[in-house]
Image 1 (spheres, chains in turn purple, cyan):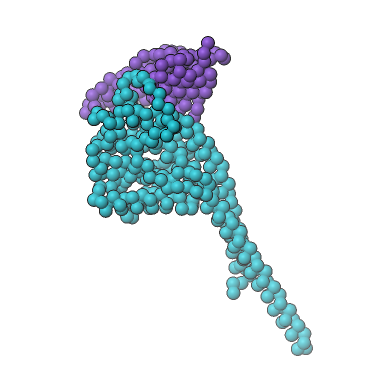
Image 2 (spheres, rainbow over the protein chains, first blue to last red):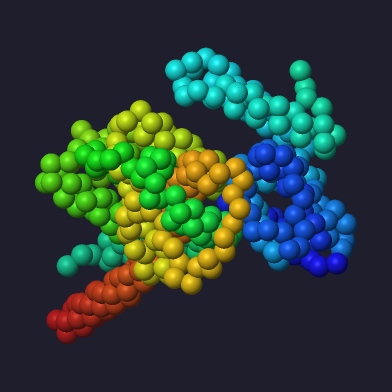
Length: 141
Length: 290
């Protein structure tokens, strides 16, 4: 099977650079899987779990914000926040959910902000909760 | 002529100064390595990001519906100068070079009849701009508690800047920081971040991408992140420049202290010899008088 070069970078570090067979990307309009010879695409990310399938197994990363650039032989994901799944402990996850909740509250109290801010924040929170479901962490109450 | 005891004290004090500057130089060298590593680590992200943005901007830039962060507000009356300096001094001309560049820029704008607003990041810049441009300052970001600048810090500054932009407080934003070249050279740089300017690399590949969602939505989503990215890389460049400047300043100081010690030691030895000679003369002439 043809392979593609996968890079995951955040502003602070390069998290992964491997030869992968497929990459599952949480794109803003739904999950997508990129394999070799994909049509060149640029898509923005929603908060979610990104999985890379390579010869050594599957690596999962929790990403949020940013975009993915897909070419026939390579996939580059530039995420504003990215952590290997192993580094997302309950503590880290709680903080991410709390931040999303705060953003929602903030959007709800500031009615004068542009339309859709509340929906965006609510979606962010829902995405965060969904991440927890995927990686097996619960939302504390 | 200073007496022997004074000279001795003086030498001791210069010696301890040399110890301090030497220690500061070594600390700066260690910090510089870390700062350079951080700058290095951020480079892949910034480069890819700018390349994609350049491509997007080129294809959307011309249209009327282009986001305001890219196309500007339509005029350039109010300028926001974001002056980034260090929180600490003792780093040679680093802080003053940046604020000097900002001052020149501000004076030029004022002479053209524009309105200038200044946002300072880092205590030293605020202090040096306070006297001449204190009334133009609209805010200050304190990073003195931050040990290692992270993307979070850049995001906070970017949020502040974007809020001001959305509130219509300014039309053009320019970053002032020092670009790190090597330990002895740092270039004070002005970089315009709003409206954003992206330089398309000459050898840029012209792959035609599918955009999901549309080009303009992606651009609208990414432009605010671009501001944060620009601020982040400026912060990292600045951190490396600061340590580099401090390292060479302290290296100079250590060397000067060494020269001074040598000079003072010679003077001390001469004085001591003079005292001995004097005593001998006294003894000999005393003996002769008998």
